[in-house]
Image 1 (cartoon, rainbow, N blue to C red):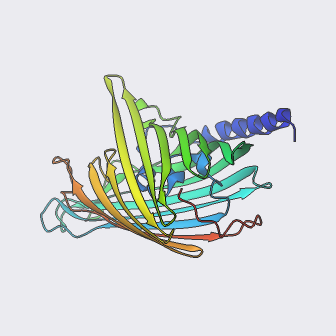
Image 2 (cartoon, helix red, strand yellow):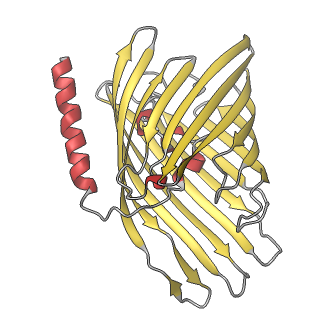
Length: 315
C-alpha cells in the first residue's frame, strides 16, 4: 500500500467520525474513563489500540469502602476495554465502556450520582526502524452526563447522552513510549477538552529485574486560566512475573482527589492480575472523604494470528 493510499484511508475515517459525532448533542462533559489509565492506557489515547500486538481484553473493578460519616455511602466503578491489531498489524480497533456510581449525602436520605460511557477506537499503525511503531488514533463515543437521583426516586437535573470525539498519536518500541492525545474535542467547555502527554521508559537493572517508569501530563484550559497536572508512576518487575509499583496521581483518583497508590501485578501466561489501593485523597473539600479505592484488574490476551501472544509487554 502506497503512502498516498495510507493518507486516503485515514482521511475518509476522520471525515466519517466527525460526521457521526455531530449527530449527537455536544454539551460539555467530564469523562471519568481516564482515571483507569495506569492499568488501561487506551483510556487516555486511542492510538494505543493494537500496540500490544495481541487481542487484549481487560476489566477493572473499583470500589470505595462504606464510609460511616454522613457525607458519603459508597462508590463503585466498572471499566472494560478491548483492542486488537487488524490488517496485518497495520491498523487496530478497540472498544471501551465504563459505569460509575456514587451515593452522596446520608445513606437514607441522599441520592445517587452516576454516569456511563461507550467508546470505539481506531488506530492506523506505521512501522519505523529499531522496532518502533507510530500510530494515529481516533475515538468516538457517547457519554452520559450525570443526573442526581434521590433515594426517594426524585431526580434533580436531567440525564443527557453527549457525543465524545478524541484523537491521539502514540509511538512505542520495546523500551519506551510517547503519546499525545486530546479527548472530548467537541466539548463546548474548554475545561472538558483535556490534552494528555504520556511518556515512559523501562530501565534494565539486570536480567531478572526491570523498572518501568511513566509520566502523564494533563492540561486543561478555561477562559479564566488553565490547570496542569502531572502524574508519576514506577513499577519494578521481577522475572517479568511479579510487579510492585507506586503511583502518584495528581490528576485525581476520583472527584479531583490527588492520590498515592500502591500496586501489585502478577503475570500468569496469558493472564495478568493486578491490584491497587488508593492510600490518600488529599482534597479536603471532596464530597467523598479520604477513604481509598480498592482496584482489581484482570487482563487476558489472545494471539491475533501473528504469534506474539507469548511476549511479555511492559506497556
